[in-house]
Length: 479
Image (cartoon, rainbow, N blue to C red):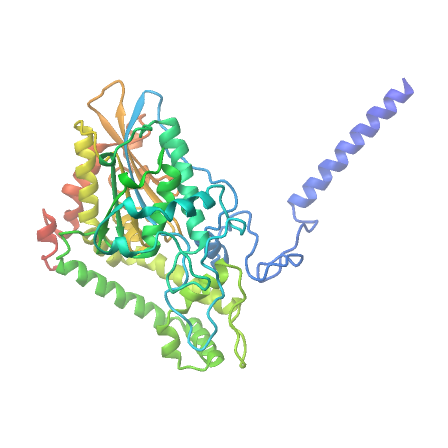
């Protein structure tokens, strides 16, 4: 009896000590893995990339840059393909941004980031199907490619990346995207069968190697069986995918106004100007020339690939320079939402693409069996205005390999009724859209009626311009 009482006492004491230890850690009375001011763990050997586990409550430029890089590490959670059991998935349309790329701009008088754009399956980040992808891409002669697409390489291959070239990280990002979508749409929902035909696909990309290669990487892991003879890739010359409806004077007007707003915000930021002056002295060029070289694009490449920022005999560009420029970029995005100039531009810029999307969804809802899977491979300047036009004000600036998905569902209990879900990087944003944000309050359906999306694109997009058509809105001057 005495031994039993002692055992119970010791067990209770151990539980109490464990509780106190956890409580002290929770209250931050015991430091756990202290982080330096620059965001790095002192024990980490990484030079730039912080190890952030939770999202900070306030704007953190380092965290936001980490999200933007989208380094393939852990399996991604997604809400694609979720619906009541009696709903049938009948169409999926995907708009992607290309994967990680080499910078489009170089910081003058500095050494370019030493990044290898050849694909090496044994080098991280990698993918189980990377080696097979490389072999398959070398056999692409049977594909149908519009325009100049046929002359573009199927995968990156330079030992020192060329400007704007897709990296191995970028390829892996879209191999992962394709695999994720395959598990949901092919394996679970049987959107395409093993005997799928070319007519069931609609594929379109801009004329850049990075968008073509991103599309091929996604398709390789997505399709039930990647067959070059069934790949018909269309070339889109416009980054906003306006096709034959690109003549829109007022779209250009609002874009110019938005650019003036950006300039005004930049000249008001004294801290930003000091950083530019300091960086210009380090590299030995005029401040104006440094600003024109868009240093954030180059610095993000250093950051995403964990390469030390460039140095000269005068000094080094450091994390503080990077933070200030990135913070201004985030502030600019926030003001852009408030001022609405970009929103007006976005409505006119994206209407041709959204109208094409709506028309295709309507045809499929009416029973058409073709083009049930659509892939647009594009850029941040494509994806960003689409998000703005839809009213997704809280969406982050499109990260590398971002994806926007439109799902069309048929109600099994009422087959004539069709609904859409819109997802951004796996998150369901359907009820964040301007045209469907209140619908969930009046319905138990976890989706938006297709007709609401149709009415928005065909009619409501023009109300803010006091117009009834795209043509009229493109030419009506504001009051």
